[in-house]
Image 1 (cartoon, one colour):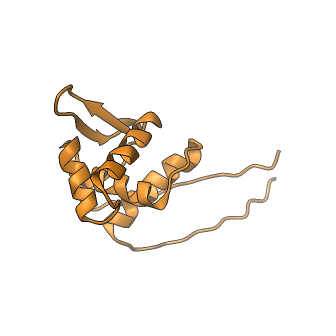
Image 2 (cartoon, helix red, strand yellow; image 1 turned 90 degrees about the horizontal axis):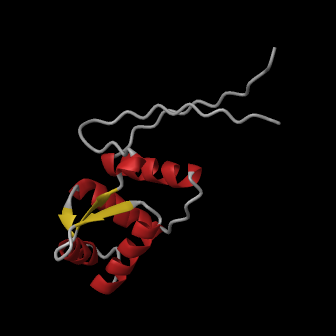
Length: 120
């Protein structure tokens, strides 16, 4: 019979932190490296659903996540190349968090992750 060391933690936090945690977890298990600013950018995008690219870049610049709209646009392009963001449209592009991430963002969110680390 195998012995398992179980760690159980219960935390009550903000909805924004729960969204960030889901993004970090997705990136960790898919071996995608993101910076703190990228994480803040993705969390903000999760809260805005479908939004026009220029409007979003201006928004995250106003929130001082990035210093300029061009820096924000570069971060969005980088995240898009990592398949974290999906873009639609030609002239006025609309962006959203990738559906592959399956980030829950509406209502009260309860996360229940069960992760087993095996010795091989």
